[in-house]
Image 1: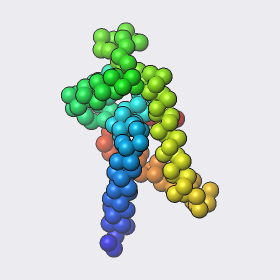
Image 2: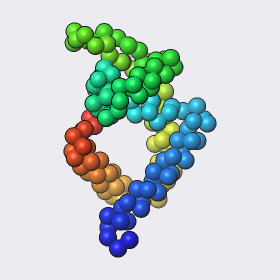
Image 3: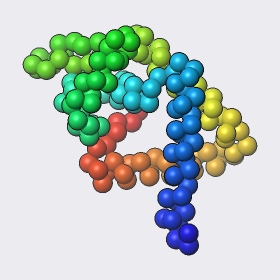
Image 4: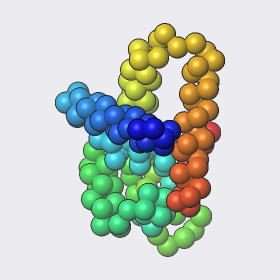
Length: 150
């Protein structure tokens, strides 16, 4: 663990462990599944998206996305609509219930982060947010899958 990248690997491994534990707690509390949270977040940022667009954005197989979007449709989180641009493929649009649930989950996550980061200075928070954004955008650049940002 003498190289910084070794320390980063170790810390990101621990971060994913904490994330997995948080996801299990979310399932038990009725919050969204991780895949629904990510898909809803992307659709909110981009607007209605087809299965093909979601497949390209997430690098997931169409069959996987069909299962995930079917479950989200049954739960009332998304609805299928004709392509607003006149294309042939139908698209998924977030519903008011999907918006509400996404906002509820995001608020829950932010409150949890507020607890963890309560003793951090505003400068530390800004620096950490900047490094996370840089880390993510570099991964996205290398993978060719940028995530839209507000």
